Image 1 (cartoon, rainbow, N blue to C red):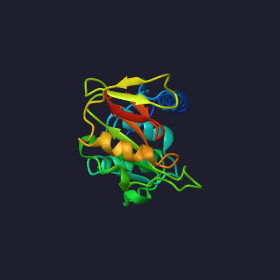
Image 2 (cartoon, one colour):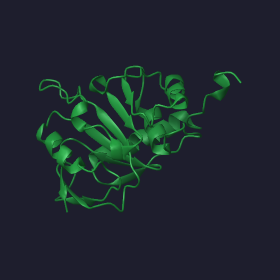
Image 3 (spheres, helix red, strand yellow):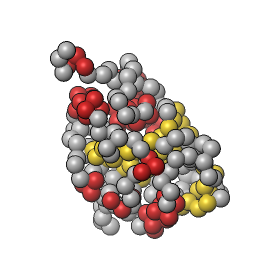
Length: 199
């Protein structure tokens, strides 16, 4: 079997599905804490979830330096990204524009990724974390832009010290990183401007 024959398909309807996924991702960031469902690709690389694959097909391109954690860096996944997205794979987390973390519970510390610069806060990384579930975990109170008053989110499977790390990240605003939390086909946005605390 040739290498080309082993490549996995992406979206069945690439244009329509990517547009649908893009709108869902924008909405997830605009309304932090709310859960959105992404269109599922036809196939998902080994070590990945449908949401991780859908987000990659939607946002990654030749200008995106993508770092993969060991769980995400399977040969099948790397071939999938090169073929469908054309994105360069970045070996150093400190130089990544995006980071795919398939094992959210053992993610590197947030400070391992670019936080941007005071003049260019957009030169920061966006992390995409796969966790067990977007519900059923310890409740967190979210406050900030896009939230009227406060909102409660309860993601399950975050790193043990995520709330402390996120407080440090939030304090860097407008610098800092943004995070998409994913589980199955679902996604939740956590932009850097949002403050979190245990509810």
